[in-house]
Amino acid sequence: MTEQPVVRRLSAPVAVASLDAVGDLLAEWWEAVGDIPPRIRFGFETAVIEIAGNIVEHSAPEGERGEFTVELRASPDRLRATFGDDGRPTSFDPDAVRMAPINEEAGRGLALAIAGVDHVDYRRDGARNVWELESERP
Image (cartoon, rainbow, N blue to C red; front, side, top):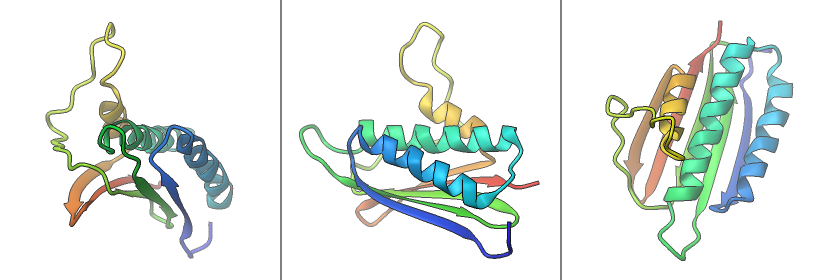
């Protein structure tokens, strides 16, 4: 990778079909980023997909459709994904997140995201939710 950051962005409706667009964005971005150790790539990609899935599933009030954005940025020392959505605020305490029991069908997304990257942050910025995921590059 060159010294210039590799940046890709997507703006999409909060809808299940948009998850395919996030996957396509990741695939195109990885090609531009170059070699990343599989463990870091898999963890980062899992975290991105899980946060996108949580936005689609939980951010819009029942019967409403919102919009979300994602920016993927690779610099020489780190990988970063920043999500924004206009959905309901959420409470997020990374220390309180636990993996759901094996017999539960849901409740693993945030735990997988936290496990997959070096840093997960959530904040409310005005009327938007902002999620930041970050992994250090070797």
